[in-house]
Length: 181
Image 1 (cartoon, rainbow, N blue to C red):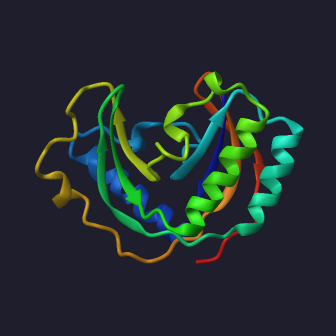
Image 2: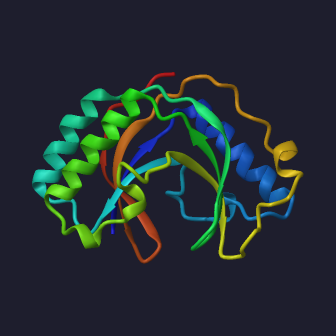
C-alpha cells in the first residue's frame, strides 16, 4: 500500500513528538513506541495500491500548492477498528481543495474497492495521530487533556511526501519542496 502524506514543519513536529512522549510516559499508547526510523508526524491524504506515473504527475502538480498552512482544532478520538487519539486539523478551503485533488488523482488510476473509504472526501477527517492501539476505549481517560494541552493555534507548513509502506516499513518515494514556518 502506498500513502500520500503531508509532513509538518520542525516546530510542529517537535510539538507532536512531545505529545507522543507525554502519552508514553503516562503509560498510554503512543506513536513514540513506533520505532521505525521513518516514523514522523504526518497527515495522510490518501492510500492506494500503486502510485502510477500518471498519479505521480498529478501529485507533482498538486504539490505546487505547498506549503499549506493548517491549524489544530483539538483532540479527537476514533474507535474501530482501532482506538486512535489524534489532534484534529481545521478543514479549510485550501486543505479541502488539496485533498480533493489528491483523491481524484489516486482514484483515476486505482480500482475504487482498493482504496480506503475513510480517505474519501465525504469521510475524511484530517488529523495527526498521537497514539493508536487495538485496545478499545484506551483513550477515554479524563486526564488526557491535562497531559496534552491544546497546541497553539499557529499555522504549520506541511510539505508533500508520497510514501510507501511494505511489511511495516516506511520509505519515502518522493519529497516535496522544503517548508518554512
